[in-house]
Every structure is written in structure tokens, then in C-alpha cells.
Amino acid sequence: MVDVSRLRAFRAVVATGSVQAAAVSLGYTPSAVSQQIAALQRETGLALFEKSGRGIVPTPAGELLAAESDAVMGQLAHLDGVVQDLAAGRSGQLTIRSFPSTGEAWLPEVVRRLLEERPEVSVRVDLSDMVTPADLDSADITIHTDATGDARPGVPGVPGRRRVELARERYFAVVATDHPLADRSAVSMAELVEHPWVQEDLGETVCGEILQRAWRQVGRTPHIVARTSGHHSAIAFAAAGIGLFVGPYLTVARLGPQVRVLAITDPAPQRLDVASVRRTSERNPATRRALELLAETARDDVGLHELVH
Image (cartoon, rainbow, N blue to C red; front, side, top):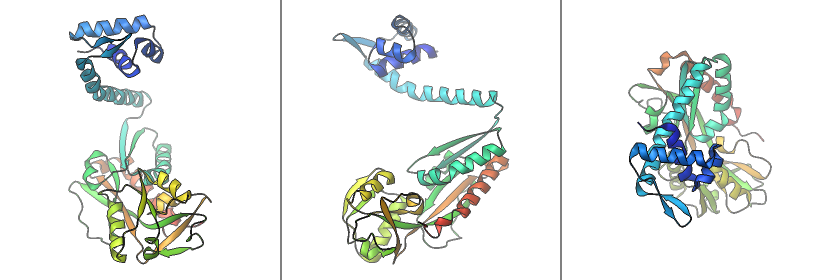
């Protein structure tokens, strides 16, 4: 079995490019790091580094070992967290996966209140831009979106999970303060597509489907002058006057005076925010309480129905 301390020293040398830099990073002496590397090479029977000029570089075997050890170190970090939780008296675990806008707007308050009520629970939150129904097995509670603007109570669920509808978010347009539409409180989609857009690179996502459907309804596709990796950068481009941004309520609800936020009409796109909970996890009181707090937080978010300035 590979010694973990030696493996950490080895990874530090690979990451920093030298024994000296690794020693500084680890808080060791260079001699101690060299001894760890030598011991690891004897332990594995592998040549892990070779000379390159005045320095060293990993051999192909060293590169492969460094890459393959990522998952191991991640598991060790997780195990350390479990030990810390147990030592602190936190015996229960709850995992929540969500897309970032819900994570930013609702989950901090939900998790804060849950931990106040149940300090014995360890909560892990995983935020991802690409949370889809296909990811439902990755957490006790998964928050995702559906591309529907209609009430569809009969939407089938996923075996082994219960579906809870949280909120319907209207879409809004974000424009610079000197944009031709800046003095409007509402604007039609047909008018919006006449102007340049800055948009997240939505790809094959629910939000992409929602906007594509709205464009088809008005018979036009906007000229997208820039695509970004997230709504924060898209809004920054909109504030600079490069183009307008269109996004759901939670992405635009807390913007400052540097932009104008306009309601969209004819059609008024919406997305449905859904929590999917693993039925076996619902036996856990912390899971049930997290769902209650999540539904309560969404219900109390008055801006879901009318964006207030």
C-alpha cells in the first residue's frame, strides 16, 4: 500500500515543479521532501522523476501516478471530513445538489436554519451549472428546472424519488442604463430580439430550450454578440452596453443601479424549479425539514411574481 505522506510530498513536487517549492508549500525542509520521494520510489519500484536541465520533471509513470491519485486524495479528504463531523457530534448527513442561482438565493438561509435546528447534521451542498433530471441519484435532494411555462401537475416522477414543485420563475431582460429600452418597465420578446444579446452559453439545457421556444414564437432569433460561461459575466457585459441579457428571476433579482431590469411579455418565458428527493432519504428528519425550509423560502420570495425595485 502506498504511504499517504509520501504520496502527498510526491504530488506537491509534481504540482510546484521543484523539491524546493514543494518544501515551502508543505512546510517541510527540502531534505525531508527528497527523502519522501526516494522512499516512495523504493516502495513502488518506479522511477517517478528525471532530470531536465537544472531541474526535474515527472516521468510518464510519475505523470500517470499523479493523475490517478487525484481520486484517492479526494476520498481521503472526504474521510477526514467524516471523522471531523463524528468528532464534533454530527452523525447525520444530508447532500443537496442545485444549480447556482437557487444555491445563491435560497440555500444559504435554508442550510443556516437547518443547522441551527439540527446541529448534529452534516450538510453538503454541491452547486453545478448543469443539474438535470439525469443527475437525480447524486444527492438526497436535487434541485433542477423543467422547461415548462404551463401548469403540468401530471408530469411523471422518477422511480424512487418524490417530485416537489417549488416555484415558477419569470424571465427578465437586463439592459444598460443608457440602452434604448432602459426607460421601459416591460418589453415584448419581439422587441427584444431586434437588439443584440449577450447570453450564457446555454447549450442543450432547460434554459436554452425555454429561450429557443420563445424565439420560435416570435419568429426571430436574436443576434448574440457574446456568449459567456455564466450569468454573472453576461450581466456585466450587459451593464457595459455590449448587448442585453435575458435570464430567470433568480439570476437578476439582486442587481444594483448599474442596470435596468425589464419584465418580458408576449410571450413571457418561465421556468419551473423542482426539488426531487430520494424517497429512502425522506425517512431522515433532516431531509424532511430541509424540504420544508426550501419550500417556505421559495414561497416567501415575493419577487418570484413581481420584481420589486
